[in-house]
Length: 383
Image (cartoon, rainbow, N blue to C red):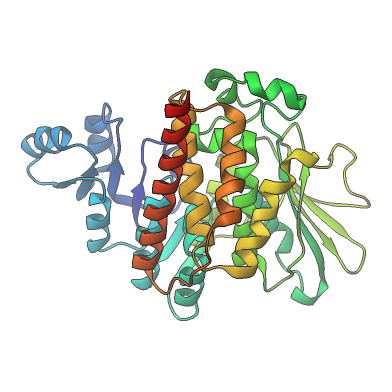
């Protein structure tokens, strides 16, 4: 089976390569994309023998084009789209942010299998993806919570689902008092207590934006089962999701906080292998280690309902605001609590618009980024 891997040197990409090495199925990585970290390109080429590689930076393109004339190379912010013109079976989309949407759409339009770690694809373009999936393509999530729910739903009747719960770690500041959040710095925010992830998703975990995104994903992945999606906190990140059934049963998925499990699930699904369900337990009551989300996160989590109920441009706006604000925070241009405050402020004043295609979403994405820039620059000037 032929794979394209977007974001090969990110945390998901690197873990995926480890899981690939344990598979008995025949596979090959015919193309991959590389962003800022291009230090191990020779090693990747010699190990996987790709047909094509996409670089972010022009300097990397010219260096490796000379060294490996038999490989097709591309460069630029969206050069990874060129990889999808090659013959492949599955796309593993491990990109971060809005840029992951277009390859997801193109993969499904090509009637291929999409292994999706880029949650923004569904947050921003869930309606477009859902429309394509009615006739083409296959989507398999790579996310610990949604894989957990998928496993709990294996061999279950759709009309027997009462509620679906995903879990949150709570991030590094869940136990902080509100006034302590004013003194949070970048190093503390990036020090996640249980997971090792990329910078943006680590910050999103601490603000609960990541969980807002995952509730939206639940809507697009599981709405045929129920519309009752909820969040509880597991500070140890051992329980990743559970399902309550109308017949009184509760099934939960429990494993250590590592992405190897959900990636293996996605790859097994891609190969149509039998799925390992040994991490699923049937329990009598909800685990007493799970706790309720604190009230200060309610406004952020409520935005998931705004997007689920309306669709249109709201997902694009939310993602764009968050992407920009995380960037500003990582560069010490705003303080931690500004992220949630500005997200809520802009979302509450945003004008709803239908988005019928990718170009519509791109326009709303750019407009939202400009709104954030205006607010931040105004704040900086005032100080």
